[in-house]
Length: 151
Image (cartoon, rainbow, N blue to C red):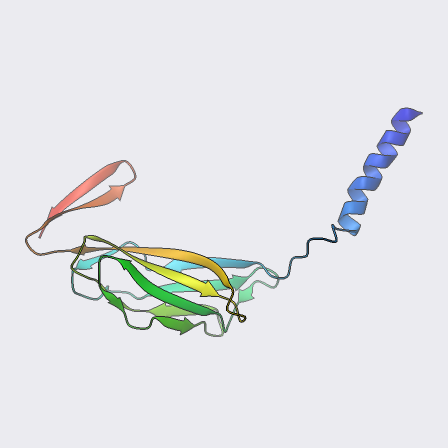
C-alpha cells in the first residue's frame, strides 16, 4: 500500500511540474550567438581579409533576431573597426571590418550584444593575429603547441 502511494505522488509530481511549471520562472527569450571571422591572420596595420560577424538567433522560433544592437570594440592590440555600433539585419547578422593594430601580435575585439531595452545580453570575443615587421611573434597553432613567425 505505501509503495502505491509513493508511486502515485512521484507520478503526480513529474506530470504536474510539466503541466504547471514553476510560477517564479518564465522564459521570455533565448538567444544563440554564433561568431564568424575570428582567428584570422594579416599584417599589422592592415584589414583582415574577411569581416567579423555575429549571428543572433531566437531559440523560441529558430529565426534570426533583427534590431539587436551590437557594439564592437578593440580591447587588445590597437587597431580599429569600421563600425563600432551595428544593428542586426533581418536575418540576425551584424558585420564590421577590422583593421589590425601594431601593438601586439594577438589582438582582440569584444562584441557586446544589447536587447531593444539596452540590456546587456552577452559579450563575444573575436581574436586575430597581426604580424609585425621585424618582430618575432608567437601564435597558437593548436592548444598544445605554439608556432613562431618572423616577418
